[in-house]
Length: 309
Ligand code: RIB
Ligand code: CA
Image 1 (cartoon, protein in one colour):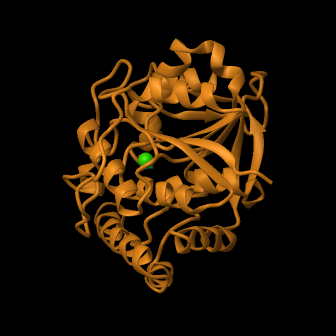
Image 2 (image 1 turned 120 degrees about the horizontal axis):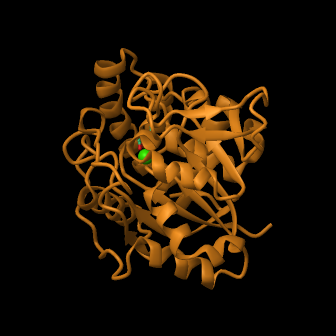
Image 3 (image 1 turned 180 degrees about the vertical axis):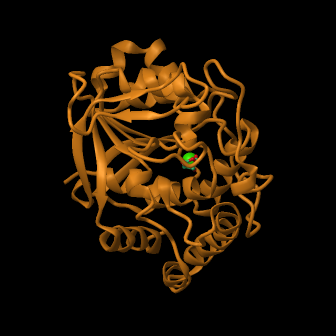
């Protein structure tokens, strides 16, 4: 079976970095472009980090388009407390060996989709600002998108407020537009990504697979430290790689089809993904929401992809 063409939209971020590596190491995916958005850190930092990761693993042929420096309507909220000042603190890795594309994220996305002979899967794992902006500018290209496998939201508690997960909290208006777009959506929310915690056992497994594994383990050691300090446990969830795995091996994720709406009016619950699990609202289902993850198979898939780098 030919590899699936995908575009990753990222805000690296430690788990974004692992998602980029996973996508590059997986023979089942063809990474056509990476686009960057402000989120875990400001846009210059997330863009530098994406370029550094791709340079580190020698995938400098992947076009990187820089996108939105801030959300559609709100001031940017970043997450240095989790990812550090650079957005990807921890082991030092070299500066990029190639430049960001002269086209911005939306144009890089549009070019990659128009040039593809088959529909492309979008894998946004940061605030959804770029995706919403792309859909506004290129509605005619929606038919060339096979699915959006996004990391974001939660059926239950948030991680940024009691109600909201970070990516959706940062740009709730963008998330609302994506969920209302009519595109096939897989929502990899906290309900499943919290089942992908990288504890000491997983980090030691990573150290055993060679140079790339060492770097990833080093990143996750840093991530574990901040997670411990902020959330009280040291198994940082590999949020973003779950959205990649959901494209690679859909069977890893147990999903339930339901309507998801995003709260944008309330200050108290801004960014909440209101998931109609029991279908009581009468609103038409618009997403496959992750409700379970095969954790062991996920980590096997992740390590298998990283070993190939
Ligand atoms: O809430 C977790 C999400 O926010 C992840 O994508 C992480 O990288 C941050 O972007
Ligand atoms: Ca992210």
